[in-house]
Image (tube, rainbow, N blue to C red):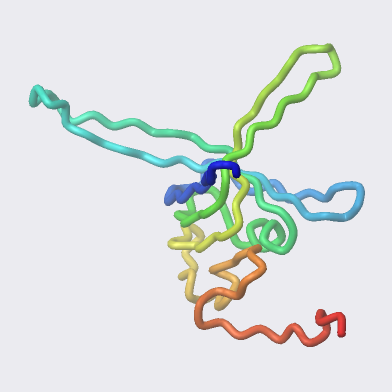
Length: 147
């Protein structure tokens, strides 16, 4: 029996760059963008308040990628859920590269710098790639049932 594990990330932050929507050779949508999260603390010795920003590489696939590409802009505040993934590759000149990114499965637009209220987007402001509908949502899947 193997031990159970969990790879789960929940972030609330602001986009650091506009989403880059592109397509794989097989036609799958993939969208990437940057997210900044901040934390602040006061040292135990009573010193000045400290603040630090962390920067995250975010990736979305499929329908969620399309929605992110349409709705999100630099500066928008979003809630994201997903998992951590690390990829390794070699560059054309033979150098080893590694990137750690968050592959998201859920996204909720919390506020938009473009001046639009996220509620103006309707159901598109909250998007998910999960196979289960979000709580309270009903979905017609009759065309997808194989029998």
